[in-house]
Image 1: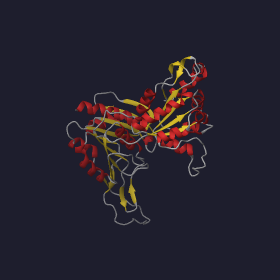
Image 2: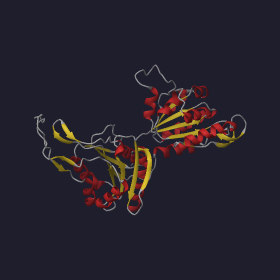
Image 3: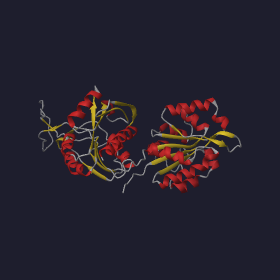
Image 4: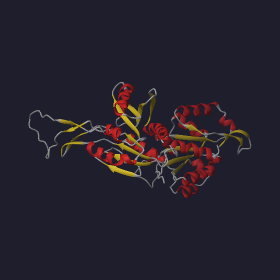
Length: 399
């Protein structure tokens, strides 16, 4: 039995007569365990009552940019941060134009400007409006920025005209949203072990050696794997962000603690995705008390930390997929290829140093028997889905 986290879809409802159809979308998403928060424009509220969306979603509807009921938070930023996917259904010519041109003059348009989640847009309007060159240009701009456009469909419109402009079938919009969430069953029931975060190697009780890894990449992988139906065990060192909802969460601090956790959980899993930034060295002898200044140069003797991926390569069960990460300052593909061969891995994800602490990556994927693939700059969530596409394929072939 799989256990998926409950992702959040931020549903922007603009002032089209098709707004009532978004209620069916909310119902469909809730049945799949997807949380929905509706953000309605004033025009949409004239066509469908916010209470209907509140009843079906189980969440308050957001309408005001400065709600008096929430003076302690900045509404548009809080909503944008909550979204795993932003879906504008239905999308009028007005909201499409605002999104394309960077206009933010109400709650929904301001949320769109602040939101970094994948966006799905389902236009609905009169055929003449849809055919307007300005609308066509705005749609192309949004598509070029990575927005998924669904529809519109052809048929009889609310105004009585015939042509393209009808809201796409709700089932198609739902499918696009689920794809944007990474909702898939290709890892259903597969046990996946993910390591994340950084390690901290004590120098004395108040100091340690570490690195700038935020944990975001590993957490994105763990969450994305769970959305695909995987049974995820997450072994995490310290991080800058909250851990996602997974089947089993194991917290560690040092490289040796992480190795012990991997030794325990590796035999139970079909794949290990080693996204943690493990310190290469640790102080050979950590001081029992705080090291005081002496006015003289202090020498810190370092010992090499265990190679967790190498251990996994030697001790894994047949068919276990191993994925490693390589953080490089130059020659990403060359160095990743060397790591792939040296450690007997199935896939290496190579990142530049700029990926540390960033929301974006520009990764290179290196697999046995294939040319390196540059993914281009993308969010860690998008990269996680790309990596798991590879993992799912490797797992399927190893069965």
